[in-house]
Image 1 (cartoon, rainbow, N blue to C red):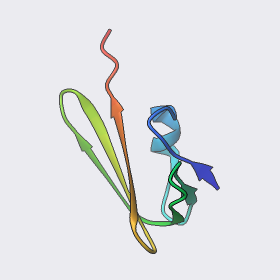
Image 2: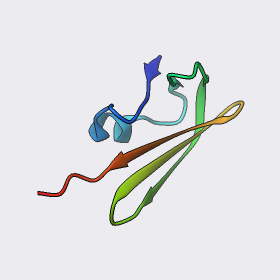
Image 3: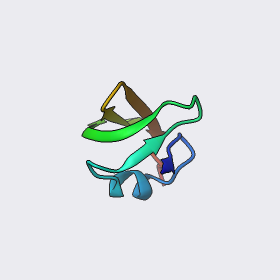
Image 4: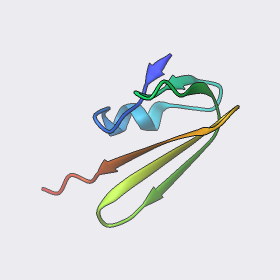
Length: 64
């Protein structure tokens, strides 16, 4: 089971797929049924829909 949060590298979040088990720091956990990624100029929003509930992770974009 992978713990997801804002500090996790974006590449790790992009590797997650349906069927993976995840949890967050608030002890929400479950198996991923759907992944939605929304992109703005400032951040990427990952929404993981679980069997029961959902977990969202917001990653600020790195600007060089």
